[in-house]
Length: 79
Image (cartoon, rainbow, N blue to C red; front, side):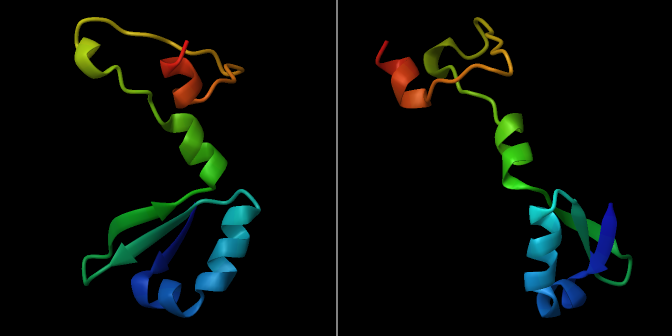
């Protein structure tokens, strides 16, 4: 994973977006201690990591969706 200072990320943002589109992850560090404050990842990778919320059933049950599950949240609610 590539790491950039926040000031460099600001100047080279369009280049960073091209790298992310190519599938690379980029960490943004900030301050004197160079603490990582953000990681820019491809949207598809982020989308896969999102969990569906169970609403009132939260904590009472769990559900697992397979990787090839192809239904939107709206379609699931309207079943």
